[in-house]
Image (tube, rainbow, N blue to C red; front, side):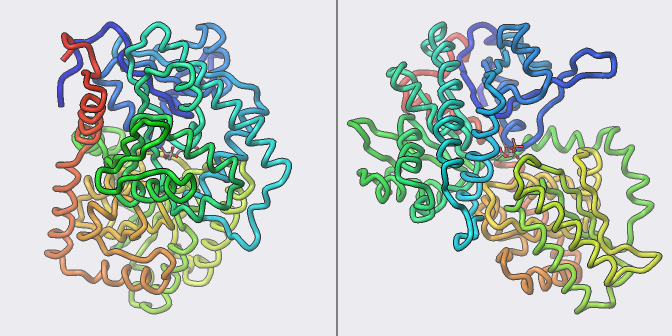
Length: 499
Ligand code: F6P
């Protein structure tokens, strides 16, 4: 990758995502502390601002964000990033945010894009949902677009990169006010087939696709999602698409549809796994471990298929009593989106199922499933290092970086059980034990196969996965996008003297 570190003035990139790199929370002394945000998107873009000066626009979410936004006129420094890189908060009314984030983005769009709706029962699109679209999602997107247009006013040459399903309608608004802007959009979650978009009324689904088509490049993690997007343009809007060239023609413009598999900072993550914070967790963790260790680490998201994963473990224990007391399933689940009722109910169902399985199979000396509702990266990495089997059985998942991170640092030649509907499957599925996420029997069987696999095969599969991850790391993901932007724009992303 080109070294952009010498370019410290100007802001050649305008990044935008709902969640920004940091949130500000009150500390013990009554001051404000910057807390790094979690999630794959933030991690990937943090890699980008390490090398390219940028302004990163995001929503004010935490209590302290509003104070920071007010005091600094929206702008704040991002610790650890270059001096020209700044954060900028978009402040919106709590009710607007609630409608935009908790009603439309999650669950409505998230559930559509992960095929999660139980369509004979839900969703009902009623006044509340329609109002959430008009007075929440569209309003929030307009506010995001305002911030970009203002930034373009002082830096008209900047490339604008928008990220994820919260921001679908912002590009059309930016394009209307800044026709020459170069707009790049990355969708980090699956793009479903066109018929599933028909869950939404025509004016909503059309605004989503048209919003994206205001961009110059629309990017996804895999060819499958890119193709589904092209199909949607053709089927929902009757547009001319070229499946070979991966383009859509709209209003005389050509939009490029691309796929770049996101990855991790392989060297940085490996270093973190060897660091003191992880070592501090390891001794306690290892003291408690049984002979075999199964691990999963996820947000408590319905797309992650946590219930079927535990049910498969239940079936496995029924079928293979010889593993009793010799195995633990360690599950670290980070509570997520708890303002959305479906997510609260999911946590309750997980708790009840785990308690049932532990009561059924466990005894006073042995608890088959160790369930932690927490977010603790050093402990998660400790589990990654020492598992025998890692389960990633998502119903659908844009990429799933846990699969990559965990296999990269595992030290026990652990085996990955991987859903065929996860973006990462296209890259590393051949070396994992692939499963259909709905097939509980297959997942129980995969557990047995992984736990009885000869060590030489475990090692060969793991090494092959590590090779892919080391070759296709985050730098490659960023580089491929920068090259395409430069090619399509006919200009460097940065001023020539910055390269
Ligand atoms: O792309 C999906 C994503 O934005 C991931 O980056 C991240 O893991 C997750 O969703 C975070 O969701 P939220 O910001 O709603 O907590």
